[in-house]
Structure formats: structure tokens, C-alpha cells
Image (cartoon, rainbow, N blue to C red; front, side, top):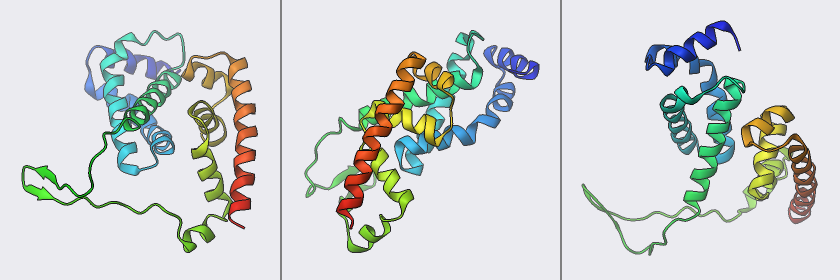
Length: 193
């Protein structure tokens, strides 16, 4: 951590918004990219990263300089992503025939068809798409760790700090996650042949 960053953190913890904006400027793009990997939709990723930066500003006073600032930030972003995913998994069920009531009147519900189409199946043969789909099928504990390590490039130590688990647990989950990913990729390849 640079001296300038420490000064900006202290100013931001005293409520200096300009110092906070300077401080987080270099983190915004990576924060959004991490959120996008978790949330999958650009608008959701924007919302989550904005929520994270609001929470960071609110709690910057609690940053104790024991871990690196970027690890602290990314831990908050990952936690908000996990909370948001869990919240979205508890969605209410609605009848599709009923319109949605808004202040501007009623509007009908449009439902996206996510079933595989022949063109989609062909596109999935590309390795990048296959890997992305396979990662999304992993259990959360493995998906999170694979994203942080293999996609975002965090070190074992950084992942340990972000997720607040031991380095041994990080290594173990990465190995298990990669093993599960290999099995899923094999299944996907066999289904798309």
C-alpha cells in the first residue's frame, strides 16, 4: 500500500468524498468485472459494484490496515455478489398470465426462452463458452474460488483473505473445483457432439 493510498483512506474515513473517489478509481473496473463474472448480467454487475462501493464508503472507518486495501475491497464485492445471488434464488413465483401493476398502468410479462436452439448448441462448441457454462454449473464454493483464482488471477493468500478461509482450504477447494469442472466440461462436450 502506498503512502498516498494510506492518506486517501484516512481522509475518506473522515468523510472526504473526493479522497474516496480518488481512492477507488483504480478499483472500479476490476470490481465490475468480478461482479459480472458472478452476476452474469451487466446491469446486475453495475448494481452490485455500486452497492459495494457504497458499503465500502460507509465502512471505510473500520478498515484496520491489517490486510491490503484491495483484498478488503474485493472481499466486500464478493460477499455482496453472494448475498445478491442467494437473494435472487429466493424469488417469488408469479403467474405469467397476470400483468404487472406499475404507476403508469399495467404491463404484460415477457418471458425469455432460455432453451438451447440449434445455433446456440453450435456456438457452445467454442471452448470459452463451454468453460463459462461449466463454471456456472459448479456449486457456489467452487465457482467462487475458480473465478477468483483462474479468471481474476488472485493469489492463494489474497483468496484466503477475501473469503476468510485458510490457504489450505483455498488449495483444496481449487483442486476439487477444477476436478468437478473437468467432469462438467466432459459432459458438456459429449452432449454437444
